Length: 237
Image (cartoon, rainbow, N blue to C red; front, side, top):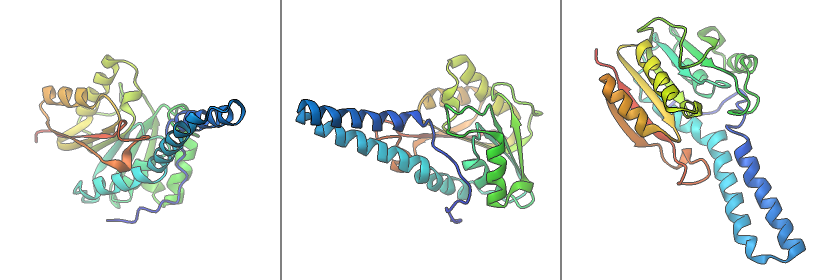
C-alpha cells in the first residue's frame, strides 16, 4: 500500500453536520449547568462521540479506505481517471499518484456546502502540494452533463458526491453519464452514504457487472447508522 500521508489541505465534508453535533452538545451542557437537567449528560457524550467519529472519517478514515480501493484497482499507470465531484482533490490527487504516464481529471460545481473551502484554486494548490499537478486537469461541470467524449476514461471514481443531486432523475443522469464516458472494459467505483441501491439497480440495467458492499467503520459518518457503501461496476469489453 502506498503512503496514506497527505500534504494537501482537504477540508471537512458537509461541515455543518459536525458543527450541529457540537452545537447540540454545547446546548445540552448549558441546560445541565443552568437548568440542572443532568439526564442530558448521556446526550452530550453521544453527540461528542458522533462528532469525533465523523471528523475521523473526513480527516483520516476516507483516505485509508480510498488508498486501499486504488491499490486494488490494478492501475498500470497510463490510464485516464475521472473523479465525479472531486472537491478539494482527496481522491483525485491520490489517484494521480498512480498515473506517471496517465491523467486524472476532476469535475465539480465547487459547493462550499458540500465541502469546506471547496474551490478549484484550492484543488490546484493541493495538486502542487502532492506533486501531481502536471497529471491533473480540473473542470467546472455538472456530472449530469459531462463535457467529455464517450469512452474517454479507463476508471471513474466518486466519493460521497452523487447523493448531493437532490432528485432521482438527476442522480440517474449522473450514473448514465458516467457509464457513457467509461470505456468498454472500464471500471466505476462509487462510494456514497445513500442511494447506493439505486445506483446498483441503474448500472445493472445498463449492462454492468456490479458488486455493492459496506466500506466499514473508517467511513462511518457519525456512527454505523450512516455507513458508506461502495458500488463497484465493470463495463463489458
